[in-house]
Image (cartoon, rainbow, N blue to C red; front, side, top):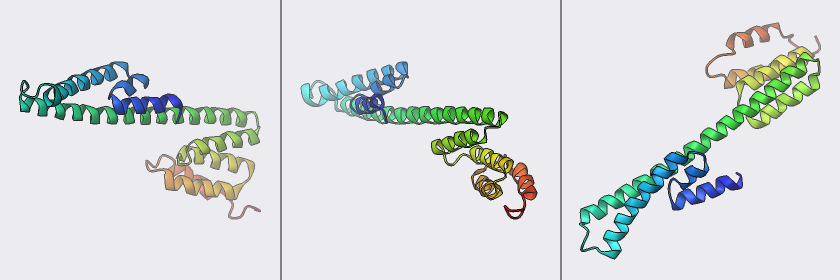
Length: 179
């Protein structure tokens, strides 16, 4: 977790919405921060400054809304961080796939294998990564590794995108690596 993200989380705990501003959701963060501040001021004013001048229901409503805005602010920041993290992973995996494809076209199978290994370190539960590994392993004659990769694809492919390709590839693989 980088420093900017840690600061965003800390600020968001103190003033909901301020972390969203650092997470590049400026307007949403600004609106939440203003709403929380207004509700918190009503609560503080009605509780400590002039409790006789502010109705109890208004103080309770301000406290309730401040708590609700605080919770919403934390949830929105968490979702924003998760979305950004997923997108960053997807971009990294896409870059690895591009490098692997280019290396395979040039016949540089070691480089392609390296790019696929990097993609696995980014997300080791990506069915497409294992499918690419299985194709590459078959191409270079590592049939045991290809078979293991296709089995991993079978475990991870919930949408069954690779089902037909996997069945066909497993049927074409020799029974033993030496054959």
